[in-house]
Image 1 (tube, helix red, strand yellow):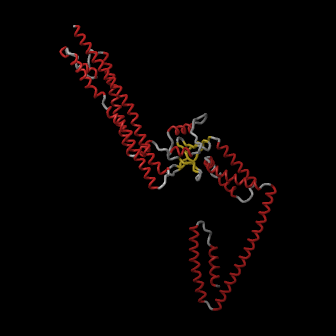
Image 2 (spheres, one colour):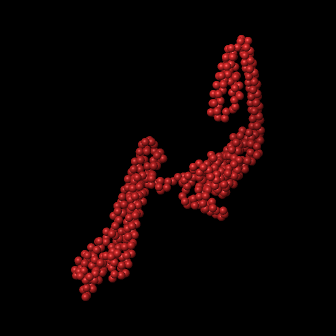
Image 3 (cartoon, one colour):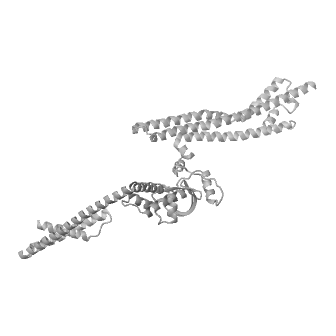
Length: 459
């Protein structure tokens, strides 16, 4: 027992000599080192005790008992002092509570602590904190308010005035459009000093880039995805303005709505979400658009050439449809048949020869109009299959799990209708132009034939 007391006493003295640990890992290392040193000292002390004479052993035991008695006396004195301090502290707390209750200050102190905690939360989430930190890094109002809310003692006048001042400063800054220099964190982790324009506690921008506020860092971060160009133009105009009124975007959600808005997928991401069927639909639509544009330009050119030919029917040109049709029976006298039926058949033959060129691409456009919704229906079915598969695999109807399949189904449907409707109108335009040209060819050729036959009969 005496040996154990000596070992415990020596280990306690050695632990007291080691500096205070700053982390759990350092404490573990210090404990392991103390155990190693204590074991070595204990082994050396045991060897010395074993090799000592009986008189020396008695002296060692006496010294250990004296050290133990001194430690016990010090512990008893410290415990008595601790108990006395506890009694004194309890009496002082009772006195303080009685005085606060008699003066009606208890509720005031509690309310001040509660308000300090609420203001600390508001200021920590506010963009104005980043501005204050950029202007004066030592002005840490959030920490001061947190300390006031967690303090056990009664706040003094200066502390209460600091609370009122911070509330007034937050209200004042929230109603201002401020411009200041600050270090902004880029998406790659680097920091760049730029001029920041803050619109109250709602929106912050630097040049044409919108910023988001990070409360944990008390600084601004440049958004990795920026909103559309119209909103970015507003930010650039606001950064360039120095006076007057400027149109600007304000997020009433203090950045939350803007963050949701920029996460909307663009048209490339929507097409990719639609799957392979959407790409097929777009290819069909693009091909139909190209063919429609080429045929439209051709019909416009034919229509212009025909009307130019109508101004002078004496000089027929084979570079336009009307000239080629009229050349089928007009020319030498031998070509003019006495039988009107044969002449009319020749006119019909010449007109029919021009019809395929005029109605070119219309068959494909009609096919694309019919195939677009059908391809969209295929994408819709595939999307619903993916949705039901997700429900089956997860065993729940979580909207987040079903969003991908439903999105693919809707995008494919919209893509199919999106190519069918424009091509339907485009095909109607081509059909109208081609019918107009064919009607002009029939009218002019039939009229010229009637005029020629009438002239021949009169002659």
